[in-house]
Length: 122
Image (cartoon, rainbow, N blue to C red):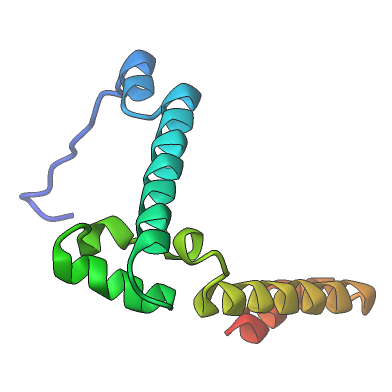
């Protein structure tokens, strides 16, 4: 050890403090309601915009200043009413990994299961 080494210890925070730092189920429910209402508001704006496609309507609303880009982040799949390509790719990847896991388990390759599955998932 170095002559200048020191040991720092930290007191564990109280349980009540830890609970106050996280959201409650009620908080999460309220966030969900707010997000749903905001998504429905934007979806109605898009439906009533004077363009034929959803993408043209979104661009129109952005140009008019009715909505801004920050409002669209994370709710694009809800507004457009169809899963995005990234979401579909993720679902397909997860399904493929689960199929591979099942194959490895049936093949009784338990000792190398995690590394084989990790290589496959990449």
